[in-house]
Image (cartoon, rainbow, N blue to C red; front, side):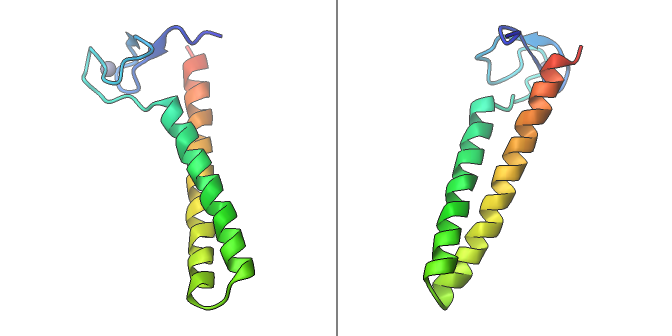
Amino acid sequence: MPSDRLRCVECREPIPVDARICPHCRAVQPSPLLDVGVVVAGVFALLFGVVLAVMTVGTSRLLGFLLLVVGFGLAVGGYTRYIDRQAASRAR
Ligand SMILES: [Zn+2]
């Protein structure tokens, strides 16, 4: 695991793993944990949306479909960001 050194998303300088802000250019670093949280939240919204859409009618069913769309977007977006980050940290 080459994860003991991260690189800044803006200036590509090596930064400490736990740094939230780049010491070189002060860019806020995206946290992989945050991405995981987004994906988990998205999956939960997706599941909840499915339950609402299937089990209920009327307004709550609409809400269920809305949650489905939002959850899907969050899950796919967070996962894509995570994959991008993995690829970026491997690339030299
Ligand atoms: Zn930087």
